[in-house]
Image 1 (spheres, protein in one colour):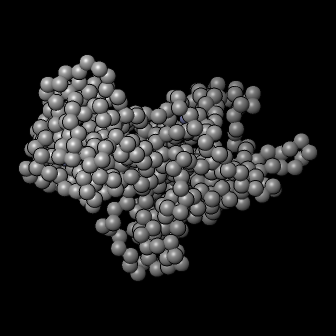
Image 2: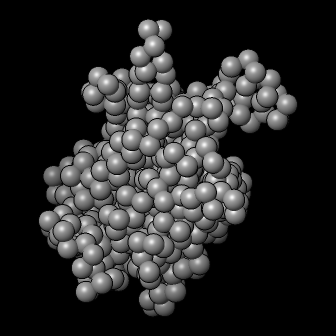
Length: 470
Ligand SMILES: [Zn+2]
Ligand SMILES: [Zn+2]
């Protein structure tokens, strides 16, 4: 048994809410002094050349009657149940993450028995299914508080260490030790240097670099975010100049893309050490989608429903947290303007989303997808919000700063977004309304419908030969 050279940075990222349900369910299926098993079926996502992330699609916890044998010394699953499990949940393209517990506390080690059976199992699944799934195994203490993971090669000969993340963001502790340059953040030390480091490492994908997106980037950049992917097909126009920090008439005359203008803002904050990728297309383009999928956080600040829908789909597919920002101004019949801004963070991994929560309108998204002529007809008929949408700097700023505050809270942990948030500010009422997210929960949404699976109960007639042993 050899350790493979660590060529790649591999991680399993389970959203905290899913991990809570998963581990609760696992503990429920454990009897006193017994070990217990859980499965996550994961999709592999090559985030960058060196970084691979496994994203759970479903999870299954065998109930006690699925075991042939369950004790402190080992676990044996019924063969019938095990075949059922793999046939039903190991969809082509998914890999198996197997987690089991050892009695006691603290980070347990893999035992010789684990080595032997995991090696056999890695070979078994790789040779039994057409897409040659890989095995990632995890071992935890009896309370599922601490554990470690490893990924096996398909021959069951070697394995390498895998990182585990069950928080919103995956941030490594190895790089960027605070130095003098970070004097810039001295007045933020109260939030802790670990949080500052997390902000410095966070990679944010911003879809929409207009009136809200640009202020947002300026504010989050000043808070410490240096790594950006900027997506927007539009160029700066004179009508934008009422609400974009530092934008000039010259930039308009020189035909600047909005993404380059926002990059310019970030580069003014950081003379060195920042990394800004600009993609001057819509989010619907394949290259934009790939860049966004590799971010730690997705922020959408566009004025159309289609891009918000796409952002939500990407967030669900790659299990990235999503922050959605928008403002709206209307004039009441008595000629008083009514202004709103909205900050929405759907829960990571489903429960409700922008679509089933009716935060965006699918009909509008479909219209926006339609060819140009149809769009123009729709605009004529008043179906689409156009460039004449009213917008003011100060309202956009309330929205952008609140969005930045929410992200600060997500990174630092002082704001819990596990069940999602949807806040709407109303002016001049000057009132934040918070949607009760329990009302937004949906079971059967086409986009975010729960993909996790409760414990499976074994049905009668099973074969007892050839059990799988752990
Ligand atoms: Zn074990
Ligand atoms: Zn949904």
